[in-house]
Image (cartoon, rainbow, N blue to C red; front, side, top):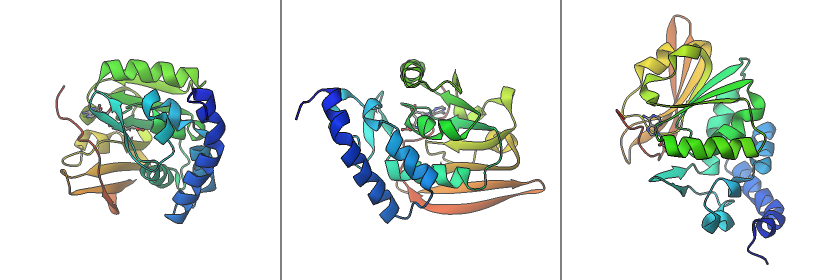
Length: 218
Ligand code: SAH
């Protein structure tokens, strides 16, 4: 087997099918999410040296001390965000290498995404454009602040763990919108879903997770 990207591409149909089967076995039921995980070339989001491991259900390093999320978690968060979704705009905090962004892109009219590390954001913007994904607006900045300008958002997804619920994100969530966010400290994080019911927020825990921290300050 060749080591070139093409070689990896040729073997990946089978490995991607295996990954999708594993996600199904773990309880991901949404066909649209499973199809999209099969479609997105995850090997193009990690370093070439790690490309052969891209379809394992595991987090991998993406440089700058950050990681690409585990496919199961990406599927779980996407499924939770899109269940009953009728809106147009999503705010994503923690762009990273853009894998979660790419998984969401075909389902959402416009994704606004905020990343703390400008160099990482620059690379990711190029990568997503090279995959013909254009419905994304990028911003280097602090995710704790959200992105006031285009708020409120029909959905918000945070892919780094917040030490507590970020007040600004709740304020930028549209009525009926949902926020998917890992909350807690190392070893004790829970994935939370918050639904804005006009007069109150409903919070549901979706189980334990392990993310890099949502860093405070720049
Ligand atoms: N969504 C990515 C995973 C990103 S890892 C994927 O699909 O694989 C989490 C990302 O959050 C990192 O890139 C990190 O730099 C970023 N991050 C951490 N704290 C942040 C903050 N306060 N504001 C914005 N981005 C932040």
